[in-house]
Image (tube, rainbow, N blue to C red; front, side, top):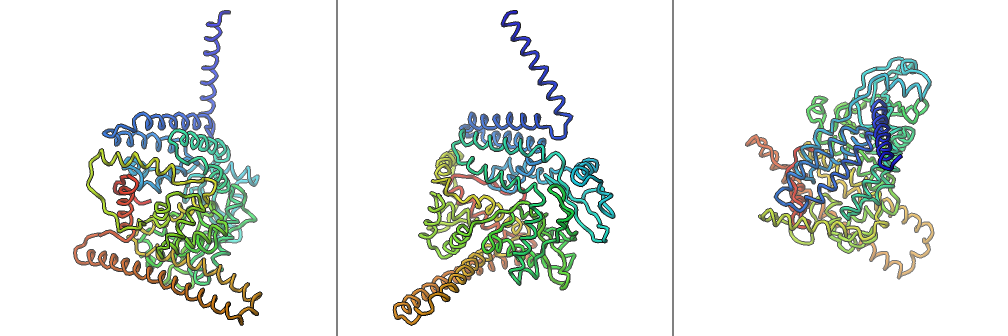
Length: 555
């Protein structure tokens, strides 16, 4: 038999085999073959498209439109973890070109529920019996559906109403392949675009795997509640629903049912007779406490995971309910304290401390990092104003951003990877506040919690020193050193408090202008977060060459 004939037989056999494999895969629930071929094909096509046409300035808008549709179409079709990845991108879409903003909007609701038969199969695999046998009642219609799970309402035989979170059956089969695909794409994009991406893969994968373990989610929720109870004021206005670990598994989580409305739904909060501004402040306090004091931080604080209800004992006051505790990040003590000091230094214009901490974390561009931390422009100079330029000027600016981002991290090994989810938390909280008109001075609240985090640590250190060094108080040199330290600390606190006062006064003026425009002219004006957003857009263009179009929606 000739080589040509053999080759034809091999090609024919391979084609038949592949066709059969794809046909079989299409009938399976996980569709692993289709999903992975789809993501790699379109991922490579996306990179090639930008590489070949990224220099054509006049056609840049068409390129963005084409790539945005390709990317989000694939994420929607693949579902599961890809929906979550797409929603993360959607939450940050305000810093992406307009085409991404428009296309990302539809993805926020792209988490269809699976039928009851699929849910019953999960129960049979986890418990060996149907949900109707485990609960006094079980609603077959889900009340909510997310990327990896959906929630059903049920009643225990004891009469307690519970929320039953059930993992979608295909998730366990898909997760390994999805994370492998994500890892390979990160490496490919790092090679093609020469940007630091792949170093985050292990950290992200570890936390995503933890998120699909509902036993871990139950532990996270219980720990979050214990942390809140350490803050007496917070424990009076923040609540974490009770978990039933004895009837929960890795794929089914049973929690106390709590009625509430989403944090950003002003009308429904008002219908409860509550103040949405007070509710927003409580929510920001709760997450700032996690970031700066406890170091155990909720990674997904979008409005669906932050509910508001009438306080059970004080009906006229709001109580904030934190749910969905699957994704948490544990900060190291060293990182948490440095992050507190970074925020304090930013407010005190202590550029040396900012530069020192940035250097410890392997960050080259301290000023850019400061802006990203505060989510507002930070500069040694005066406020930056947008200049009129041509499309070619814009493109020339954009050409420089690649080099700046390439060198943003001098040493990836030193970069604290907790920052990945801390920044995600802060961006979502900022978007929540902005969505309802920026009623709360978020930056000042977070800065106060940062200083509180330092004070908590300093008090514990001072207590130890007092226990072991009482006899040194009598020494004159020690008195002098103590007085100098005291005066220096008081001066720093004065500078910090003065900066907060100036920020609060600016916030008051913006809110007063908002109210005056609404009362006198029936017009909506920019809130504090929106003004910061516009300043950030101006700075991103002026310093880094990024042109950011207006928001089409809020994350």
